[in-house]
Image 1 (cartoon, helix red, strand yellow):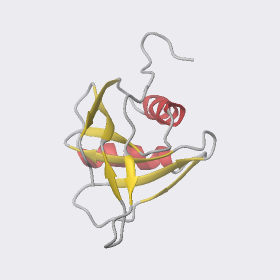
Image 2 (spheres, rainbow, N blue to C red; image 1 turned 45 degrees about the vertical axis):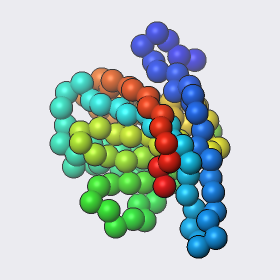
Image 3 (tube, rainbow, N blue to C red; image 1 turned 90 degrees about the horizontal axis):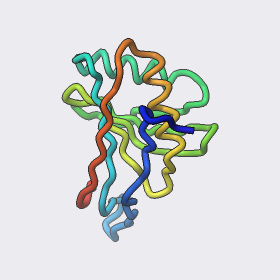
Image 4 (cartoon, rainbow, N blue to C red; image 1 turned 90 degrees about the vertical axis):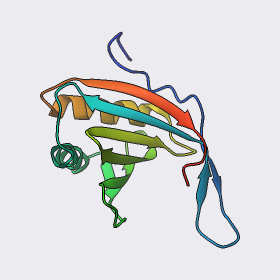
Length: 131
C-alpha cells in the first residue's frame, strides 16, 4: 500500500515484443521509470547499491551485456515481475517489459530506498521503440 510519498509505479504504456525474421527480439514503445537520488551519486556507487540489493532474495539477475553502463535483467521471485535496470548519468532506470507489473517496481524502489542514505525522485517517461 502506497502512502503519499511512495510512487505507485503505475504503468501508462506497455512495450510490445516483436520477433523480426532476421532473428532477435525488439520492443515497440517503452516505459522507463528514472530514480534520481536526492544526493548526487557517481554511477559506480549507484551500480554497487543496485547490485547489493539484487544479491539478496527475492531477486535473480543477470548482467549479460558488454555495454559501457551497467544493465541488468531482473526477476523478482516474490512478485513474479521481470524488468531491466540500468545505471547511467547518476540515475537508476527501471525499464518495463511487456509483462512487468507495478508491484515488482515498487518493491525494488522500496529496497533501494531502505539501503541508501538519501531519498529518490521518481519520474516516468514513455516513448517510441527502444529496440
